[in-house]
Image 1 (cartoon, rainbow, N blue to C red):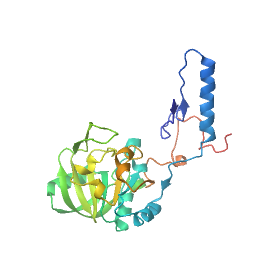
Image 2: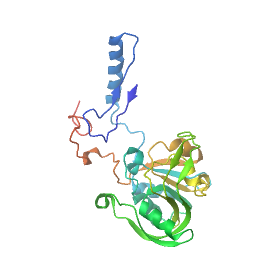
Image 3: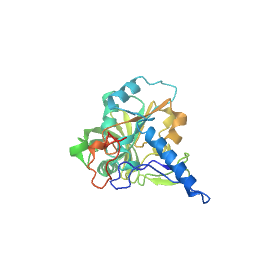
Length: 265
């Protein structure tokens, strides 16, 4: 089996690996493993899933094909499944700044804003300081604006019906749906990756009827959202799960290693 490895782990073993099971022919197993690892090395610079910048994704949103399904955007560098804080707001900011209509996003983790929405109730107009609570010096500032409370959920619980986590219950915690400058935004108390359309349907939103959908996820959302999408893209919103590995202060990672040490052969 080929194991890609988790590039954000600061351990000596971080990196790709191969495991081969044989019927006793260890030499043949090593040969196969070495061949596969050589392939990994030869293709190391190929990226089949490029990340768009926020500026590029803004252009994609403006060129959207209304009526052909939504443009689905994975906020990959703030993906909770990869260790992201889930409270980044730069993609939401881009949606708002570009005046995107008929758009929804799930989910921004901000328990204090969710609690505020519950305290004021459905229909209330509330002042919010949204997101960037964990590392505002790095990923801030928060969005300071007013929002309208559209829907509330005490537990944020739903049962997935998409291929990824079918029949599994997911809980966003005490949560709310806010209208923020026209963008319907799910605010959660638990930091969870969005993989299923039910994260929107819980609050009365039909994802297929949207023009733009933004989710905090990298790849696991595709099975549920690809069938309804006109296109699926990933965006680098500048958060923790960055693919700029030079920005991390690795202490335990074995060296040399590509791409940190670029002259390896």
